[in-house]
Image 1 (cartoon, helix red, strand yellow):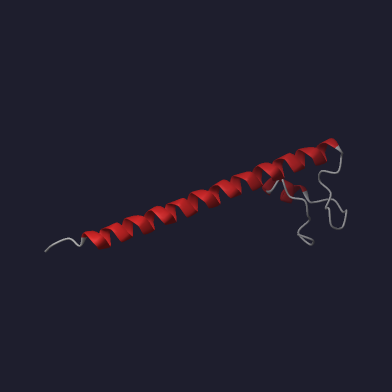
Image 2 (cartoon, rainbow, N blue to C red):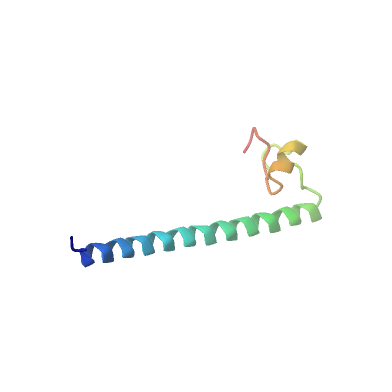
Length: 77
């Protein structure tokens, strides 16, 4: 049995493109996470952290523990 080199080349290129897409998505997510953390720190500074930016009600502590960067209560977000 002979290996089809052109098929292997296509698979390698497809794999490389898929890995590149995954890496780019990971980079975008990291930038978003960093922006969310910076925004949360700003809300701590201006004493609005822990309050929903939608309804202005306090965000439950359990939600803040699970997602410290959240800006919304479960109802609004």
